[in-house]
Amino acid sequence: MKNEVLIRSNAVASAAAPDGRTRDRVAQLLLERGAATAAELGAQLGLSSAAIRKHLDAMLADQLVEARESRSLAPRGRGRPAKTFVLTAAAREAFPHFYDGLATAALRWIADQCGPEAVTAFAATQVAALEDRCRTALAEAGDDPIARAEALAEALTAEGYAANATTIATGGQLCQHHCPVAHVAAEFPQLCDAETAVIQRLVGSHVQRLATIAHGDGVCTTHIPGPSREQVPTTVRTDR
Image 1 (tube, one colour):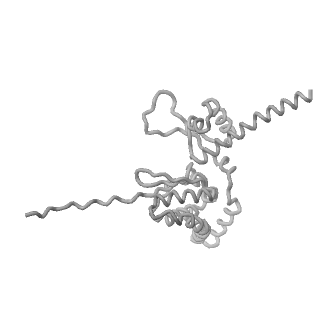
Image 2 (cartoon, helix red, strand yellow; image 1 turned 180 degrees about the vertical axis):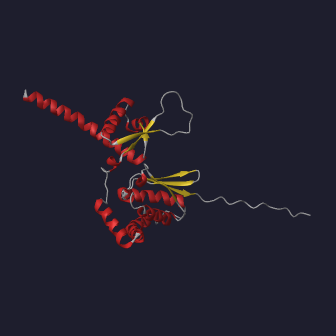
Image 3 (tube, one colour; image 1 turned 90 degrees about the horizontal axis):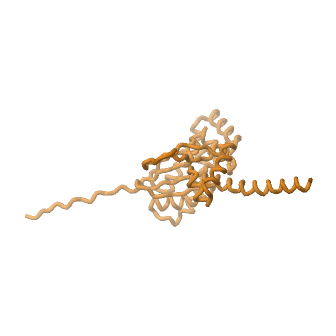
């Protein structure tokens, strides 16, 4: 009887382990992408729709992901619109964070004792070392802002930000899928402002923050405008 119980326990454990690993892969993929549909996750992980939905249902029950209505500009066909899935704040806590409640308490003390300007100065000091390391990584990236953004994405990924850069119609877009200080920056946006200033200095172009994880968005998104197109002067004929 004991042997039967032991065999059943081992079977349950061996079955649960692959499920856990798959859900870790789902979580990692959602961290990198910000949001994805069940079909997109299944295609990326090589799983059937039924299999991926089983994992997503379990993660929904554990409050590790949440479902949102998918936004698409394409004409919608028959049936229900596809839902996209994003990580919850609780799920993000499983990934490395370098600041905790003590950092928040310290910043509150600084703000109370010295004012918000002191928090801004502190934030700038904190990102100075990151800027130096990234600047070294960009040494051979050239002067083109988009090329520098791509090199910066690699440098930020090495720092734990899971970043990538893409070219879009209006220039470039730098996306950071993880923020080590998101829970602190939610209360002190000076941290996000200091980081945006670093990105602007490193790419050598004006940038615009469109979204941040600290404010509830799935990804920190920074727009890098492309070079403006100069108009070619019209040649005026002077033949007489």
